[in-house]
Image: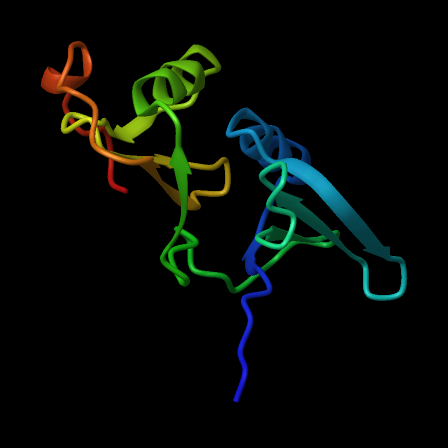
Length: 142
């Protein structure tokens, strides 16, 4: 039996805000499908050069009644980054809350506008612990 990763699907309430969030992380839209009949849009976004590893943003035009209020029904997305401190600073500079700061130089968590938990992991070895990250408290939950 052969199995191959295709994508992770998450439902979103505000497609434009969510796309902007993932663009801040460096993902690009790879394709989009809009269904007039089904009244939904599917937007696939992936890191450049990794188009085979997309996140699928599913937007129902008429809303999404009945979903869990915190959208935690799938866990989280995880991405490695070249410099976790620079990535977190970039996100903060653009209004994103760092829910779990990279105090250890290795791992951080943020949330999308739809409350999707995103884990950021330092590629390779952890960076040396540094301020302001080392003493930064958690904000909310992740």
